[in-house]
Each structure stands twice: as C-alpha cells, then as structure tokens.
Image 1 (tube, rainbow over the protein chains, first blue to last red):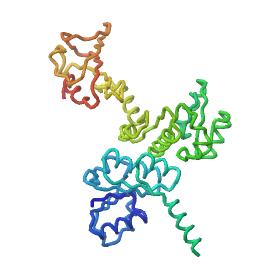
Image 2 (cartoon, rainbow over the protein chains, first blue to last red; image 1 turned 90 degrees about the horizontal axis):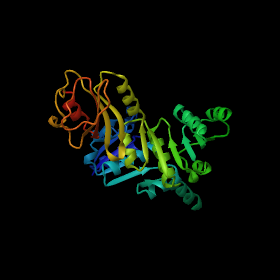
Image 3 (cartoon, chains in turn orange, blue; image 1 turned 60 degrees about the vertical axis):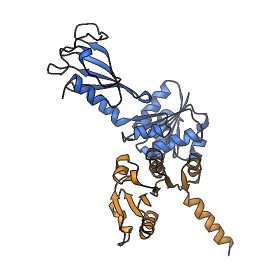
Image 4 (cartoon, rainbow over the protein chains, first blue to last red; image 1 turned 180 degrees about the vertical axis):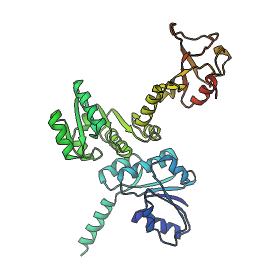
Length: 133
Length: 220
C-alpha cells in the first residue's frame, strides 16, 4: 500500500515505521524538519518538509498515486482540512483523521470522514483498566 | 439579521463595527480575553470569548438562529472548520470564510462553504487596477458560474489594433461586451467594430482564459 502520513509526531512517526517495516511505501509530511528525528534510522520511506493542507504540497508528496492518507498533526482543524482535501479533491480511497475533540469528531464522522478521537478511545481504555482492578 | 463573526482581528473588528452600524444584531467571537474586553468597552456587549470551532461555544452563541456566519481568522483551517460546524451542526443558511491561501478558495467551496473570499486575490486585483500599464484587470468574478469580467487596455503596439471583432479569434465562450473610447459614449461592439489604440475593452470570459484573451487582444 502507498500511504501518506501528515504529521510526524509520536503517532505519525510510529505509524510510519510500522508500515515501512511491513514493506509499504510511506511518505511522511511535517512542517518542521526537526520532527523527522522521531523516525528510526532504518526508515526506508520518504520524509518531506511541507504543509499537508496545501494542495501543491500534497501533489509533490505523490498523493495522486496514494492508496491511503492519514492526518495526525497536533491540530484537529489541520487534520480535518488535510483529510477532506485528500478525500474530496484527490479521491483517495482510504482516509483516516485524528480529531481530539469528540464533538467535532461526531460532526465529521456524519460528514463521511473516517475519524478517531484519542480522547474518547483513551478515556474508555482508562475506565476499563480502572474497573478491572 | 443575526450575524456571527469569528475572529477579532482587524477584519473581524471592522466588519463587526460596520454591521452594527447597519443595524444588525452582531456577535463577535474571539479567543483572547483582553481583546474581548476592549471590544466590549468600545462596542457594548457584542463579544463572546471562546473558540469559534468549539461546538459548545457555538451553541452558547446561539448559532442555530444565526442568518449568516462569517469566519475571519488568519488561519484557513480554523475558518473552514468553524464554517463547516456552523453549517452542518447548526444549519446556518449562509457561511462565509476568509481564505488566506488563494489555493484554498476553490477547495473551500467544494467543501460546502457558501462563499470563500481570498484576501490575497482581492489585494492582487486591486493592485492590478492601480498599475496603469497592466493590460488586463479583473473586475468581477462570478465564481459559481466560472465567468469573469475583465478589462483589457489596448495599446498602440497591441495585436488587436485595427482589427475588427470578427477578425479576432477569442477564446471559446469569451465575449467583448463593451468598448470604452476616450471622448465617446461606451459602445457595445458589433462584429464590425474596429479596435483602436487606447480603447478599454470590457470582456466576459470563462475562468482560466485570461492568458489566451490577453494574447489575442494585446499580443505577447
């Protein structure tokens, strides 16, 4: 699979290295080159400095050949914009978007984006851990 | 009308003042507490402190009864999300977003924003108008129809001088609507109208035909 990951934070970098290790073609985008330090030295994919909400930058990252797009920057709104451009402008078949704010997540879920809210997921996991004691 | 403005920068602030003067009910949403206090001191209780992308804040602002929702922050993604939330969650009939990166203008419209205004494009168009040597000026863009109204200044050395309208090969779907000549009444050109130096031609053209039209009238 050919995957573009927007945001090379802890999650983005980890996902990139997991997919890369399984032989997928991975391109990671981040506005800050310093973020790429999180990628392991064995990483065989592409790391590009650039804004994933910019159409031209996405073209440079090869979005027209991508099978999947993942938006995992720190900003909910940035993720939402990047994901919608990937889905509606470039018609990428698989787009996943991180949205911390559970209410905003519901709205975009209803608008057809595939989203994950770490807030909801993590709170649920914590609750299960606590109640399992 | 009840109008909600997100972002208390200079665009939001002056827009708020202008709309209040016109007698509208206006609410300005701004994250910064000090700015909010300043607005309240000057304009009365028109400001709500909070993030215009947050569903809870928008609910508090009574967005569901707003007629128009305008996002004017300096961040395109914030403006898009605020408008999308207003439109899809609160069903505001008209959403308007300021666009800072001109490339986002068409994307915003595609993503359901009723009106996306590119600040950069607006400034460019006005500057073009002020540069007398610039041969082609954008007067009006009818965005949804994909038609633009432009003014072309014919110079002495221009390719179209001495040619009649029917001799020109204009880009497809382009029309010369008006010829303005010094000292004469503006006239609607016919196929036989001959263009002269210093004519100002108002033309309608499909978006994107600018280069072809300029080439035919002014030359390279």
